[in-house]
Amino acid sequence: MNALTFSLRSLGLALLLSLHATAAPANVQGIITDSEGAIIAKARVYLRADSAGKRTPSTESDTVMDTDAEGRFALQLRAGFYDMCVMADGFSPVCQKLFVNITGILKPRIRLKADPKIAKYLGDVF
Image (cartoon, rainbow, N blue to C red; front, side):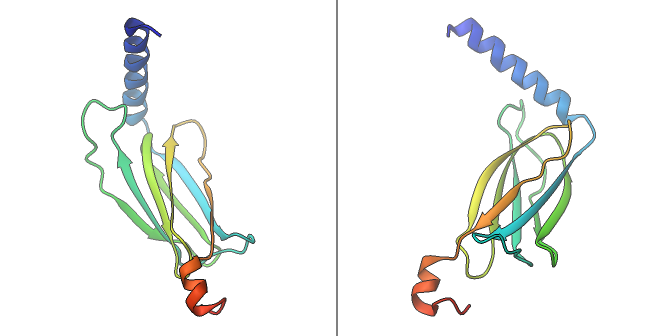
């Protein structure tokens, strides 16, 4: 790939992200489960806007919420990249990058694994 092609692709991505950023927020509806598929109520979900592809740094506030009794969370986010970290008592935290766009509903499904350090000291009673 030559420098001109790279520059044009970068410009196109920046333009696409800036157009998406001015649009209505997109719906994000996720569910948090353990490695066996059981729901995890009251898991902490932390989202941080990532300015990748934008001309100016993000001014969005971080979003923190807990899952409901069915392990679900729902919110609206502007288009763009986000870091999402999920934590729950007794489990190892999981972080991943999300890309939110304005076409449809994003439905992340996160599976947490029992933390080996906690299991070592407490067994499976936590």
